[in-house]
Length: 622
Image 1 (cartoon, rainbow, N blue to C red):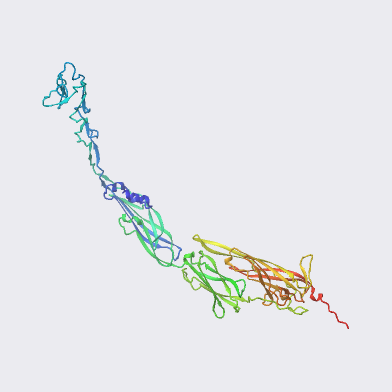
Image 2: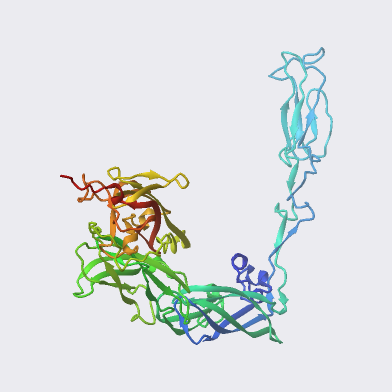
């Protein structure tokens, strides 16, 4: 019984209704007066559709029964103390009144005058009655007479030393108690008392009280939910026993868990202690559920904001969508969601570049990006390139539809070769295509880019934000080998004439939160007034990087073979009109997952006349 009570205290299954009067029932292995039973009678799934790792509802019904019987109880034997000895088992010796004997005293020396000489070791003897303990003394008369015959009941006891004449007291031990002073109590034989068996007692039945029990819900044998349920007595009857019974209905929300397909769902009641019940085999019910996928992944390309130049590192970005009305699924590293990228020749379908990303994570009802850094070959000459991305290739994520896991797009390709403008020639009038009203472009499409992506840290999702930005400054100076040069005292800008050359220096500065996610700044173009600032190949000049570190690049004109000493110079056509001559510089091909970042920088000089103003024609004379 003590073991049973300890179990009830240690666990939440405190079923009071089955333990009434249990101290008496189990104390001496008597038959149990209390019995009970729990039965799981029904289990029913309430959700119409059950999806992977999603919540579904379930209902279970349980019956209970408990009975307390009346019974005869045998109390333990009781100890009865002997009243004659007070429980000690001994009494005081009456012969010596508990003293155990007496001291015999004599104050007459044995060698005193008038006394006979000692004939042995002592000059006199005391005789003690062995029946009553009284004494008779030799040589000096008698004392302490008794009615017994001394010759038959006496013993001789030496009294003193004849040589010294000293007196000596002698201890006379009581023979009745052998000197202990006590004798065994005749009423209890020395035991001090005895055990008596009390009569049997009738214990009437008592009402089982309410309590709690534990109910478990399991999916494929794993406990998903447990709850303690209060037992409310619904019905009862009292005869020779006291019986109670009733029904418990419990609803629960369970997680369907990982994986799809048929799964077993069980309901248990009082499972750990079912072997103490009347029926040990009716504590559970089970049913099957069909778990279906909880998501349908989709992938889409984030359209690039620029063409892909040949011989350039670029980044192609895709968005994976985990949003669907059918359910919700947290895609974690264990799903090993993959994305495979391919760049293909748009004509031949030959693979130009391929790469793979694994372990993509996406929270339920969310999206995440995946991006690929790759190189457009220098020799590629098609106008477009085919781009393909396929996700969930290993089917680590269960989906309702796998057909939309691949997307194929294309993007324009432009010539990334070094562009140079044609040499100037004698033209006194601008070409008909020249637009005098055009201003140098100075606003870039994207100078700052930011992107967000989900990462998995410390067993949960963390949204990371990264960014990249670009800026540049430009400076135009008149070539040192040119002709006329002056300075405008108001603006500080240099003045020259059309037909002469200018130099340029552009300094580009980049900033990023993660250099591994972006490319380098790969190009700088110079756009000219005489070509209406167009980026058509042959109408602009590619600048050469002459200095570069992690965050900064300096660009200048490539060396001009048409110049006097192959210096880094651009010649202004003679027909360019007076006024501001602006050059626009586009620093570009700084690719990020959010697109291509670029920056326009502009500078100008002032045109005042043409090179012909510095030349005179002299007719020769005779």
